[in-house]
Image 1: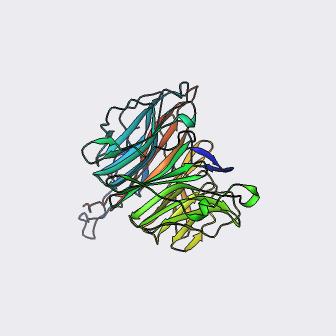
Image 2: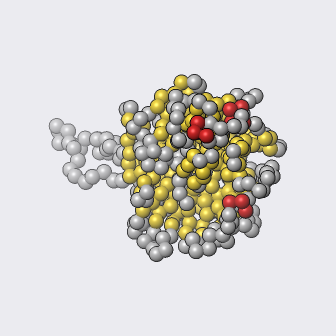
Image 3: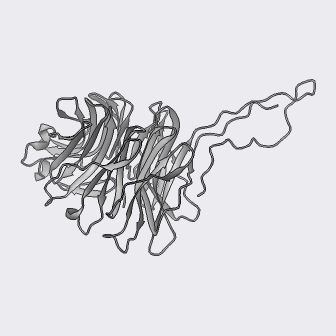
Length: 411
């Protein structure tokens, strides 16, 4: 997922815009007289744990006037990373913005120690499969997209270092939209005009992949548009089991699509939707048989292999990201133009939304990335709150989904 707006072959693919941390301890039980047994002595009773809740996390002080977080990943309850930028000024968009990576250690968020970065810009994407295999992708600030440069960093558990992508034709803009890591392999996807970018890091070097045949046929599709595919998100389960999401158009088809890599080639995977100018923006799941794909305006499907169910009642706002918890339950971000952000989960056959808490004094908020935590109910969502300033500035936020804590019986 890439939080930018890009027009590809006349199809608009929108994937988003531009406190005191509530502790994880259980609040005290309401005061009142203790229950007593028939003999009058206090009887041990069990207190009810509070329901899980999304809460604002405390962050280190970030440089203004604007800071934003765009993506987040967790590999366990004590290792998570969030990426974005700080020190960005809307008045100087081409030469401000310091790329930022925050790291969670199970207790607090702190700045990650980065190598010397001499470019202005931001990190958009982060992915990992272990505490010693973390990847981040970002781009430089520039007057025009053709002048932007992509930067890829890798963390080996000790230090971050840059791992440049293969150089492409600089005369056309390469948009990197997806990043995933599994089994020591890293996948980066995106688009360059009508071409799909698919790069795989095998531990030693990058390997370029060809997109599915339908994406490379040339000619025109429905309505006279050029044949094309876009990859907007990617999720790997093994080096030979990788899924991507986006859309495509060619004679007889136009609409959202999934794509699958089986170790030898990429193929298109229709989900039962045709003749629609829409696209998936995000993809999540625990396995190939438990996929969730969402797109703006209420587009959502679930399933796996060749069988997918279209979920008609998904939230209708901008849906930049989706994640699943260890039980496979999905959570998605729902941003409205207000701006205001909500988080929705699929429960008992329907989407159930809850407003996202925002910092005191904020006049709005947008979220951009969400992640589950393997082996834990802890989740994180990241974005930025709108401040009551003129011009409007933003402040980065992290939300934590804190599970209910078990409580001991009390006398």
